[in-house]
Each structure stands twice: as C-alpha cells, then as structure tokens.
Length: 386
Image (cartoon, rainbow, N blue to C red; front, side):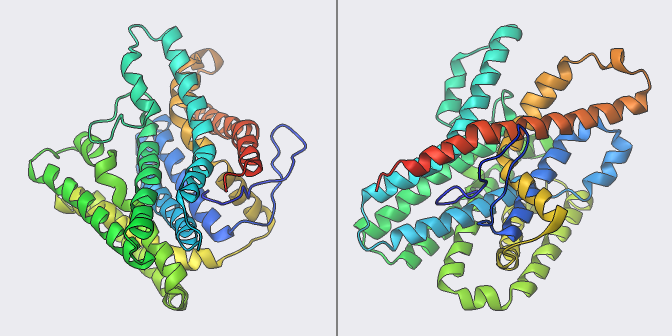
C-alpha cells in the first residue's frame, strides 16, 4: 500500500496473528485483496484439473493491472501533496524515494537472494552473471523477462514508475514552473500514448501470434505497461482537483467499470485472440475500467465482521503473497515434495496440493509481513529526511 506512514497493524501477540488498526480505506483493501486473489488463483491453476479450472478462470481478471492502477492512484495522491508544498525542494523527492523503497525493496531483495541461493546450490549450470539486472530492475525494461523469478516483471514496472514519474513531475513543477495539474495531465497523457504506441509497433510487426509472444513482448515489459500506472495518477488528479465530479457519479462510474471489465474478459475468450484490441488497447481499457472503480471504493472507509478481517489481512500481506506464491511456493516447496508417497488417490492428491499451495503462501506471507515488511515500515517512520 502506498502510504505516507505505515497503516497496517499494531503489535501482534502470536506468530501468525496480525492485529489491525482503523487507519485504512476498506474499499481499496477490497480491490487490493481481489487483485492478489486473482493472481494467486491464476498461478495455482496448473494444480487443478484443466476441465475445472477453465470455469474458474472465467471469473479471474487481470490482478496485476488492478495493482498498477491502484498503486498509481495512491502514489499520485502522495506526489500531488508533495508538489503542493510551499517549500518544495529536492529533499522532498529524496524523502519520497526513501519511503517508497523502504516499503518495497526489503521484501523483494529477501526473496531475490533466497532464490539466488537456492538456484546456486541446487540448479545445475545456473548462471549468475545476468542476475545483476534484477538488482537494478532492468531485466525486462525493453526485452523479454528471463525465466528466473518470473513474477518480478511487474515489480520492475512499479520501480521504474517510482523513479521516472516523480522526477518528471518535480522537474516540471520545480524547474519549469508549470502548474501541477498541467504537469500531471501532460505527463500521464504522453506516457499512456507512448506505451500504446510501443505495443502497436510490436503488433504491427507481426510479432504477436500466441499467448507466449503476447505475454513476453506486450504484457510484461516496462516500456509497454507504464500506462496502467498513469491511469491511476490521472485518478489522483481528479480526486484532489475535481472531487465534485469524482464523487457525484461514483456509483455510475463503478457500474461502467465493471461492465468494461466483463466485456474485455468476454472479448479475450471469444473474439480475435491476439488481434489489435487484445494486443494494443486491452491493457489501457482494463486500466481505465479499474480507474472507474476507485471513486466508489475509495468512499467505503471501513467494514466490520469476519469479512472485514479477512479482506484486511489479505490486503496487508498481498505484496508478500505476490512475491512468494510462484517461485518460492510452487517451484521450490511444492515441487520438492514427493506427493505420491503421501497419498495415492489422484483426486485427493489434487486437493492436498492445492491446500498446501494456499497454506504455504499465506503462512510465509504473514511471516514476511511481520518480520521483514513491518519492521522496515516502523524504521522508515523513525527516520526523518525532511
């Protein structure tokens, strides 16, 4: 979550218990939780019979794009408030990066180094030389993401967004003396158009003809996906500068957003797979649809009961879940277990593996949140740059 101070928990009293506080926006937690559930369910599809999963898959939407738009919105709100500071200086920019990276980098590097160590010890002919790209998030800037740590593709896009957009906006406002609103609208529009154009170039070159090429050349590169986050930044502008229109039609926006998402899902499954719309426009229309959900969800400030607790927990550990469910849990934990020694019935085996997949993912994520992410958030709030 993109917050100015950590807003997750107070002290907890047992190993797997997280105690909530009331400084969160429940509607955004719902969206964040749905996004990570879409991702984890999608990644776990290979554990299920394909006949069953195809029905489940119909209800799964692009969780990563949801994350992108939500992150862009939250970061956009923070940046606009920073840029409105009467005493704006480069120190504010440094403080922003410090707070962001104390939130995102500890968990990322912990998982990265664990995976590097495991591969060095147990993977024959594992090559270390090109893994330095992962330290600087350039492994998929404009090229195909390597097979190692595949889920890191989206983190590269996020980190380049954190670096580029604040820099561009700061230069526009501080040095060029442009108005904040103009800077945001022009920057967001140009980057959205740039990403769409980069996707069009690859589509027009005849490079996209199956799911693999669509995924590697369009879906998971920095230069082709930055637009999703900028839709969120545009949302932040309307939230802070045009709140009347943001709030007045929030229910209607929400309904239109849901309709677009469903129509896009239907289009993907039934019409022109890997054609112009899916290759060039889909990521932007999905992002726009997600943006339309935000006015209503941002107005849902709190919840109650078991549903509230489950949603808040999943939202809090969503980053850790994203980092661990695929490479750590699936590739290293589940694949290392000789399941046939435990159970011979094929149907019970599916149930057991799927239960283990979720149990390991949730358990490890809670531990990472409590003992890595949360301590760094507390440390971050004790260190004052400005």
